[in-house]
Length: 409
Image: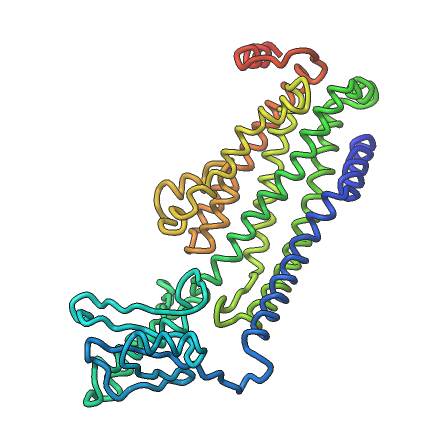
């Protein structure tokens, strides 16, 4: 046990002192702070120095359809009539108007409206599009229409979705929406990064120690079980520390984002349950992939070949990210449930599903149980692989040879 603890301390200290590990650990909180600060700065610039000051914009129009009546004023948009496109164009070039629109004679048949401006744009700005749309729509309805009906025609819906708890019949505590999804989505990405960073260091270290013949010296002092146990636990503890830093900073950043961008993001909350589930999946996911990486590191003759062998499992683990749209739109589909229960895809799939739907507790519990059993089973298999291949040098064995040697061990 003392030797295992020595290896544990060595691997933990070595990893947490790595520049790459430190940068990755602090990158998420710093990027989050920069994003929030940048958003506030942009909002301040866009809003101007005086929040109460409204910039008035003049938009010209040429109505060849004969539809425009008396309505020509909005909150910060004034619409000015021109008799011809040439006159409107001269005013635009002279800077008397910001832009102008041309309503074609056949507007009622095809809704064709051309917008002219002196600046290049990716698309029509949202405020300009809304202003032009409201201008045309209010004039189509005419001054004789009831103002309330006109307002409802312009803004027909103020739709809100309310999720009802099927047990109590009352509004549920978690209402879902974008704010509930974005945090699990980001966390799923961070979860993958942390798991594969820690387990990747394990694979790289084992492969390099084997390639440089350092493994022979290590195994002369410690057993293979002590070596792998110390490495897995040491690197796992470093990864757990990283996840803890990210989760603590996530709660802080979520509160800042909710206060400053509540209109866009809504209320973002990092619940205790989510933290517990996230840490549990990190621990199980790390143990699972660390054992796989350790096996790959002991089989490969060098670091490059070991990493190539591990790529298959890495691609399986991140495969739910490729079907993210499917998971979001079909969180309760049998395929989504299967990915939740399949050990290699369980961490990402479950975290993403939590953000868009109420995942039954039995699915989460069964998923964790299957992952735990997989860890135990792979641990026994990895022990055989370790004993068989750790001191085997030369050409990397093929799959058939690997299976044969494992059976003989």
